[in-house]
Amino acid sequence: MASGGIYELVDALVGPPERPPIGTAPQPLRPEQYAIPNPRLIMDDGFGLASSKGKIPVLIPPFHNHIVTAKLNVPAGAKSLQEAQRHLESVLQRLEQQFPPPPSGLGVVVAWGLPYFEHYIPRLGKSSSYFRAGTSYPAYLPVDLMTSKQRGRTVYALQESRTFPSDEPPPGFGPVRLEQNDVAVLLRSDSLDHIMTATNAIFGTGNNQAGSLFKVTSIRRGFTGGAHTGGQGLASKLALAAGIPGADMIPRKSPIFLGFTTTIRDAESSVPVSNFETLPGWTDQWPNGYFKHGTIMPLSHLFQDLVAWYSKIFPTFDARIHAMFRPGVSFAPGTVTADPPEQNEADVLTGVQKYHAYGHNGSMQPVNRLQAQTTGNYGHVYPVNTAITNRGDFATLDNPFHYTSDPAGDHFSDQKAAGLHFLLFAPTTETFNRVRLAMDGEFPDGRRAPFSSRSSGAGLNSVVHTTHRQNFLIPPRSHRSFPLTEFLD
Ligand code: HEM
Image 1 (spheres, protein in one colour):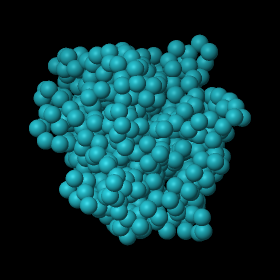
Image 2 (cartoon, helix red, strand yellow):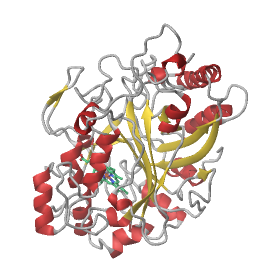
Image 3 (cartoon, rainbow, N blue to C red):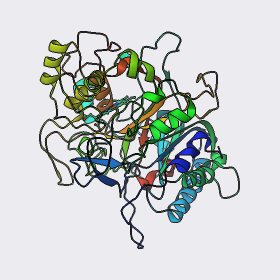
Image 4 (cartoon, rainbow, N blue to C red):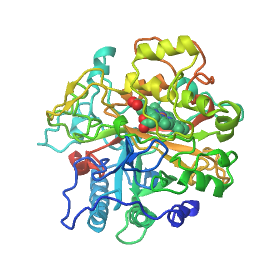
C-alpha cells in the first residue's frame, strides 16, 4: 500500500501541471464530495497541446487517481457503527484541514455499495424499530422516480450492477465479476504524496488512522493527461516503460492509451447536474433528501488491446476516428482532440445503415445528453444537449488491480496491462445502464444496431473488455461516513 510502484514515474516524468492560483483564504468545501472545484481548462489546438489559438476547451483532471475498495471490519449494531462513523469522519476532516481541494490538493470521495446498506442499515419502514425513537427519517435510499413509474414498482437509484451484451468475455478470459464491496474510496490529486498520505490515514492501522474499520479488498491505481504543455504524454511514456505490446503506436500527445482526449469540456456540465436532486422528477431527493448532493458511481475495470486497436482491427487513423467518434467524419491526421457535432439517435441509426458501424462517442450522445432545455431544481437552465453524466475514468497498468485480497478470484497478475478504471457520476444507476447499452448499440426505445456488440462496427468494443463491475452511492460530504448509522438505535 505504501509504494506507488510504476505510478511513481508520473511524478518523475512530468512535473505537477500548472493550476489556477487558489488564493490563501480557505475555500468553502462544496457539499458534493465528487466535485473538483478548481479544474484547469485549456484551449486545445486539436493535437493535444494547450495553445492561445486552440479552439477546443479541455479539462485537465488530477494526474493521480487511486481507488481502494473494502469490506467493513465493524460488527453490525448501532454502537459500533456510530463509533466507526465518528472515527472515520475525524480522519477525513483532518485530511481536509491538511490539504486544499483537488486537483492540486487532495480529493477524497467515500462511496458505499449495496452490501453496506443491506447488511448494516436495516430498511426503514420494514423494521422501523431499529431507528431511534423520535427521529422521523422519512425514507431509505433515493428512489429513481422515472424508472419506478415505468416499471410500476419502486426502483432505487442505487442498483446491483449488471452485465452488458459486450461484456461477453473473449476466449481465455472469465466472466465479468460483479463485486460486493461495502465501500470504495476514490483519491485524486496531482501529487502522489498527497494520495499516499491519505491512503495511510484512512487505511493504515496505527493510532489516529481508520484502517481498523476496513478489510481492504483491492487497490486500483492510474493516471491521466500529462502532455498538453508539450512533450510526451503519460499514456505513451508509462506504457513504453511497462513494455506493453503496441505501446510504440500510442500518439505521443495522447492523454489515454487509445489516442484521443476524453475530457472535452462540452461533454461535461460545468454546473453540477449528476446530483440525485438536481433534475426535476429524477429522484425523490429534492428538496430535503438525506442524500441530496450525492450521486451514483458505477465503477468498472476494462482491458484495452493496443495491438488490435492500432494495427489489427483499426489499422488506419481514419478507422480509429470512425470507431471512436462516428463513421464518415474526417480530421487532420494526428488529431488527438476532436469534438464533432452532437448526434441524435436518428443520426446514429442512419450511420449504422450506411456504414454498418457506429462510433463509441456518437452512439452514447443521444442517451447521455438532455434532449430538451431543462431548468434544474436550483434554477439553472441546462441547454439542450447538456451531458447528464460526469466522467472520472483514468488509464491504468493494473492487471486488473494494483493489489487484491483475492488474487485467484480477480485473475491477478503482476505483469502490467493497458486498461481503464472506468467511473462516472450519474443521478441513477439506470442512467448509466441506458448510456452503457447505447455503447452496445441498444437504445431505450428498443431500436438496436443489427450486428454483434463486440463486432468491429460497434465503436471500440472489439478492443476492450470489462473484468469487474460494481455500483456505489456517493453520499453528500455531510453524510459520507457510515451514512444513516446516526439513525440506528
Ligand atoms: C477504453 C475505453 C474507453 C475509451 C478509450 C473511451 C474514449 C472516449 C472518448 C475519446 C470520448 C469522446 C471525448 C469526450 O467526450 O470527452 C468518450 C466519450 C464518452 N465515453 Fe468513452 N471511452 C471508453 C470507455 C467508455 C465506457 C466503458 C463508457 C461507459 C458508458 C464510456 C462512456 C462515455 C461517455 C458517456 C462519453 C460521452 C458521450 C457524450 O459526448 O455525451 N466510455 N469516450
